[in-house]
Image 1 (cartoon, rainbow, N blue to C red):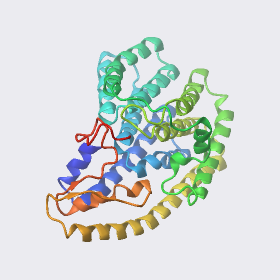
Image 2: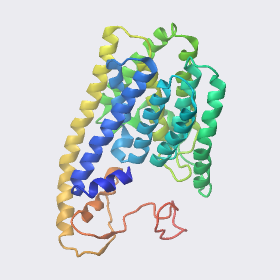
Image 3: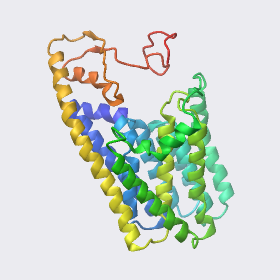
Image 4: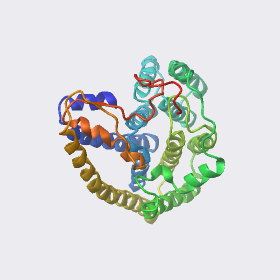
Length: 360
């Protein structure tokens, strides 16, 4: 994600480069979800629209671009592996390269990719699924070791959300909220109803599916749900773990819905229509938020006009909305400045650490 944005910034003005990056990421996520569904089931229909509001959830608005590129890469690579007809030597070489691609996007996505590969191996009508699964484990081992080594020096925060808080956040579908849960209640309800319809008919239609293809994805759904309730929200060098895991839980659940045998036409249309309603509603709120954001941008640009290149700026905000805490970056659009706005300045993965004693 950072490398792509840096390349776009070398070609386009900053604000336009960011919009191009958004467009590319949306296309990548939509394409990856479509490829995965088609590779697994051999077809797609309106149910695949359910993937869009899930992939473009809170993480997208919060700017977790590297993680989302990792999700897209995982889905692309898993779709390729799902289509591999045999098990030849060059496939054994390509799988580690796919793992490296996912790792280069975001290390934590390697676990998601590995889970998809195991689900494919168990469900696919191929010889020696155990040997293929063992080779997958070998192919992923360097990435797992690198991730462990990277996070080994960072403490875990086990004092995050309680079980009741996590359950309430999941029930409210906060992982899908862009700006304000109260304003997006209708959209969350539409998305929730679409998923409930999908689960109902997936359970009914899935009963007739061959056993090996019936259970791997539901098992992944359960595993991600368990991980959501057990893994701390601040793990290693990553935070917002609960939002990431809730999003992956919903994504795998939607994939399971999409790959089942055909639903009744009305159910398929309802799922796709409700998903579109949820997404359109969020885009409408985003347009209104953008109006206010443009006003803030103009204020910042006026402030930047009073500064000189190289000035040191320490922004102080009274607005507690998370999305607006990084708006001081706009100051650097017109001239180079030193912005001291990083709220995580004692994290080891940042090049400048102010004080090790600062609270996290």
